[in-house]
Image (cartoon, rainbow, N blue to C red):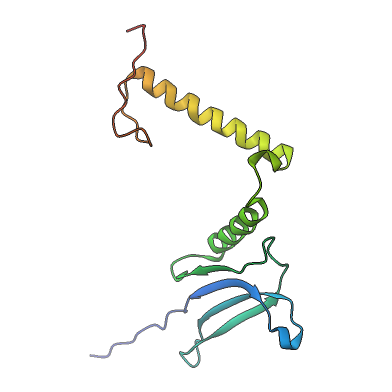
Length: 137
């Protein structure tokens, strides 16, 4: 009996935005580290120039073997945006994003309040059980 194993395409292991080699005058780089299919060794698969993060600190997304590229890019973009807003009050966001954030907070509160009026159990920082009920019942 012969067994043939299909060789799976190796997925990347880590993606990071880090500062390039200063001795060579390199700028910030977006580096993808993974397993080379030919040699089965861990190597740099992709190394391209990118813009620097707002705070000047590197961004790392480790253990991405089960994630696709869209999810990893979403995490990188979120980390970049977080660094841009870090250390600033929420009101320092651009006004369109601040209004969207504020509206989302209000809608979340209203949705939870409606559940409380119905007597449904909600999870949250207040505990596991919510005992508030509407006066109308």
